[in-house]
View 1 (cartoon, helix red, strand yellow):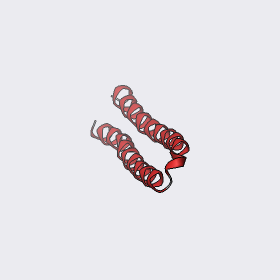
View 2 (tube, helix red, strand yellow):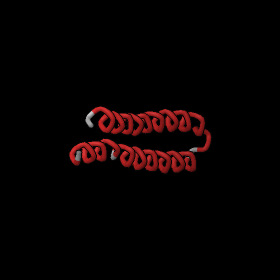
View 3 (spheres, helix red, strand yellow):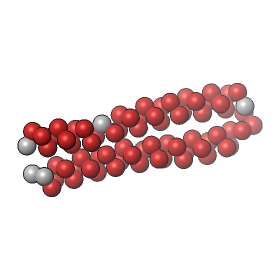
View 4 (cartoon, one colour):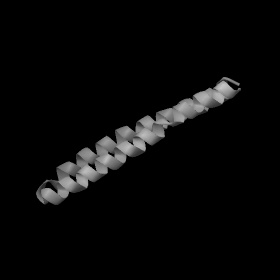
Length: 73
């Protein structure tokens, strides 16, 4: 039972990586918009796509953690 909890905790750690990645991407996007305001539309599109992909990895990690807990009992 303890190893199942450890495995689930490791799977959920993908959320930390996604949060760090989204934070860095947002910081760089705001810096880019400040430097070149006329490109803000393209920067926002790329930022939203990148954030969606990063958040998807966090959601996948959460789903794997739930599956580990439910099916390995």
